Amino acid sequence: MADRKVIHVVAGVLRGHDGKILLTERPPGKHLAGLWEFPGGKREDGETPEQALRRELHEEIGVDAGAMRRLIGFPWHYAEKSIYLDVYDVAVFAGEPHGREGQGLRWEFADELPHVAMPAADVAIVNALRLPDRYAITPEPAHDVDAFLREFERTLAVGVSLIQLRAKTLDRDALKEVALHARRLARAAGAKLLLNGNIDLVQALQLDGIHLPASDAAALHTRPLDHSFLIGASCHSVEEIQHAVDVGVDFAVLGPVKPTQSHVDRPGIGWDHFANAVRDVALPVYALGGLSQQDLPQALNSRAQGIAGISGFWKA
Image 1 (cartoon, helix red, strand yellow):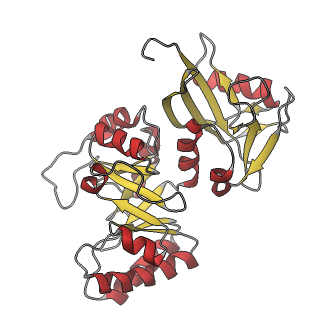
Image 2 (image 1 turned 30 degrees about the vertical axis):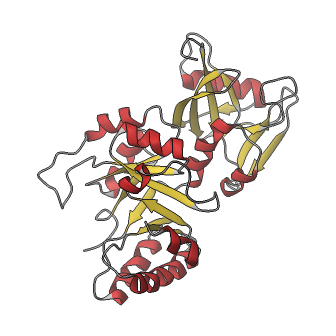
């Protein structure tokens, strides 16, 4: 496999006015025929990935792409061939998409994509599309649970749609009570609630998923919950991220990127290190550590799914 030629493939995420995402069907006679994918094709010699995608979108579905942002990119090895998949979020395009090569088209909301028959490489893309660009983590609930829940509700009210309840100091009964209140608030806001650890409580309360501490993720050999749950993992190295990919989690967080309030004397890994670490992994990865919401543009430019943290979202 190491000597096999790697084919550079580009793909675009195009959204309709209703937010649905365009998929195209792989035609008969081609590799993975009959599966649905994001439109695109092979990059030709001398083209940048953006140039290749603009050409492919015009040739394949008759649209002219405008502004685009790289969403994710990674190598993938099928039994038949090896590819490097570069995926771009196409913010603007002109023209009505249609199958210029006779291929079928369909539009689906992001949350419906896991139910569509797609190539294995597209799982990471689907995960990236289903996740927001902000991932809030709660501080430890204080003695005043009512105040904690008011701040939890305020965080949801400013548009945060993915939030981790991190409560390591509570006993099980207290944690269950807080989690039930948080679940009610999250669902009312249309947000997803993950619990740090405690897989049995995640299942018992039917929360939206679990966030695995780095030590818990390292001990896994297979995915611990089915795909109706979201699974995130804390990582501190490229090796830990790759292990998370192998286990089959849905996303990871990597950091600290900057010094944090709790460890101001420790330097962060920096944006260049972060970008290099996530460059070729088939997994959405949030940047974590000492970040505020003003760091979001830098995070996106550094190949992050977005930003994660406590102090950047939670008022003291």
